[in-house]
Each structure stands twice: as C-alpha cells, then as structure tokens.
Length: 272
Ligand code: 2HA
Ligand code: ZN
Image 1: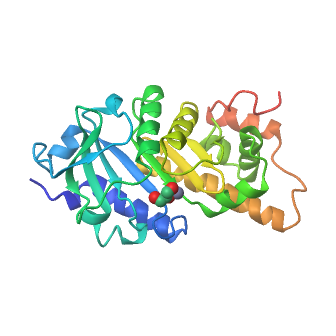
Image 2 (image 1 turned 90 degrees about the vertical axis):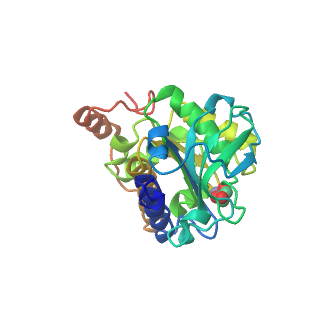
Image 3 (image 1 turned 60 degrees about the vertical axis):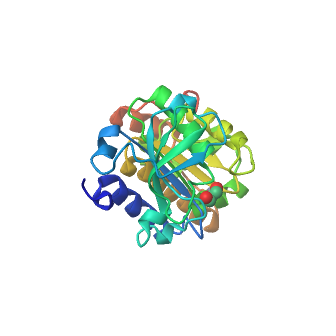
C-alpha cells in the first residue's frame, strides 16, 4: 500500500485548508471541506475491508451508500491540518444502512467528521443530480462576503449583480449567480436541506451572517469560485468606503462579456 499522506487528495485538503486559514477565512474551527473519492483512489492507499470505527449519521444517507469521502473533522482548526492530518481529516464510506459512516482512515483520537456533514452530504446529493463530475463541497467564513451579508440586499439577484459588477471576471466564473438561504442554525438538517435546495441551480450559496458554501469538480475550481466571489466582496467594501459607486460595468458590458466567453448568465439577471 502507498502512503496515504502522499495521496493527491490528502495533499489537496492540506493545501486548501492552509490557504483558507492564511486568507483569514477560517478562524478557530471555522470551515469544513468534503471531497468525494472513487474506490480506485482510496484502494491504492487503504484496505477497504478494515473499518476502524462506525460513526452514526444523523440523516438518511441512503442516496450515497457505498460512496467514499475525505472530510475535515469536527472542532478541528484549519491551521493545524498540515501538522496533524490524521487527526484533522478522516476518510469514510457511507454504510449500506445509510445511517452510519465506516471510518477507514484518520479522525485519530476519537475525532469526528465536521458538524456540517448533513449540509455537505445533502449538497453532494443535489450537485451530483445536475453534474456527474461534481466532487467537492467547501464551507468557510470568507470575511468580506460575510460582512456584505449585513449591509447589502439579500435578494440573490441584487447580490449577484453587485458581485458581477465589482470584477470583470465574476460573470465568467459564476454565470449561474450566487444563491442565499435565510439565517438558520448551523449543523442542522434544516440548514442542510436549505443549502442543498439552492445547490440545484448554483455552486455558491451564502449563509447570511455566517459564511459561504461552494461546490465543484476540483479543489482549484471550488477554491477559485469562493476566492473570486470574496475578491468581489472585498472590492465592494473598498468601493463603499471610498464613497460608493460613481460608474460601473453596465448590463450591456456584461452581455458582451458573456458572449465573448461563451457563458450563459442566469436568466433575468441582466436587463435585456
Ligand atoms: O465547523 O464553520 O459552520 C465550523 C463551522 C460551522
Ligand atoms: Zn461555519
């Protein structure tokens, strides 16, 4: 067996969590990532028949039976993932009952998967229905987006349009726009269902006064999505501090951009 610490997925989890901590998006134990893995990717590094521990799952995971995930751990600090990967991360399979996880590696010292596992798994289910290549769900407390949820309209059309106007790249990176759920208690099945419902049409979902969820096929794609939305929110913050918008990217400009880059903006989000 090869050393799992050298696997591309453990390395990607370490790199992403380290960058997210460095960028100030994940103070203390804030944030979580889950990464859907194929059986081949897992079996290169661990014995699939050697279950270390059974961990109860609080919602019905029947739609994901037999799937493998590596996730961050509950209460773990992103800043520590690099130095303690086997404690801060864990790899498990959804058991046949759909009611528990079979831990195959990691979560040392009785650690548990992220408290946001319901939101992650429900989002995986929702995204897989619309994108067979989907693999990653990422949550963090991106500072400027979080701040913007206090000062900006929480209508998803208004919010999306502002982000699209703050950086020319935004429309190209997330043409489907950004979705927003109401404030809900984190870690619950309720917030998981609300997030997953929005994930049917968008890869980015704002949790007001809390943070953001992103999803996609590769770590670079999801990280890049959140990074781009967060950059736009940062520019918005500067623009407001400098006295507000005097001129902006027009809808006509955005339509030109969409045509040039071959993307379809969310219907009715641009006038025309
Ligand atoms: O895991 O970010 O939303 C810590 C959180 C909860
Ligand atoms: Zn959070």
